[in-house]
Image (cartoon, rainbow, N blue to C red; front, side, top):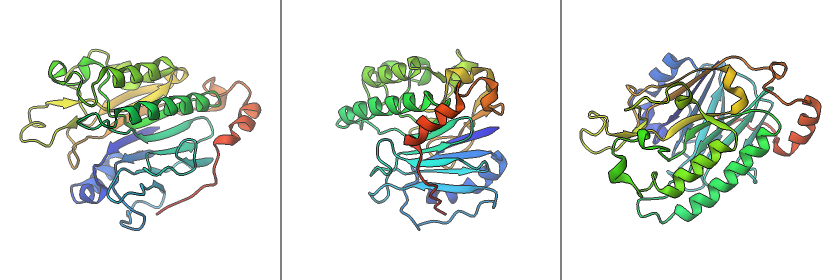
Length: 281
């Protein structure tokens, strides 16, 4: 099974810069995007009929937003965390038979850190949400988490210390999330790889010189470790200030030991997370 995640930094712009070509080449089973910057009806993606499209739009125009395109039929789809719909369109959760997939666009603390307090509170809620899901089925999280976790995850760690995306508070939140039972899948396979980035400033020659940050991730419940096959960064792909990230994982079933011990009890207790399927094309 192949999963792709990409912060497209405005889908309409990305479509004009090669989105369709990459989408077809990637041939993903599940393709997640963040920062669509769309309102409902502003674009109609012409994807193969085998893909079902799920969209979560921000109320504010030209802001945030997430979407998932999947060949695999989900059991249910949820928009937001505690509420069915949250105003910034940051989360879509697809429940499959043997796992949850959470596509997320984590709030940015802003350059002046004016939104840091909001972000930290949001991350506490998000971690709790993932832990509740993980109690029922293993979880795969993908998206722009807006944090470089360790110094190896950005080019200029020293000069960016205390800057948005690399503050001690944001890095600690990421540590807490991993310690809650999740794997950073890229570091699982490549713990010491340097110069592996997913975002670059739009300033001249920054991307050409690979002065970047790794802020886009696939995380997975720790018990999925035996199923992980590879994690990749498609740094050569342009069209956005971010590049796509990829997770390859063996097919999972509840009988493989990755799912709940008691599938019936887990299914009953997971009802609180389930919403009717809503499809936006």
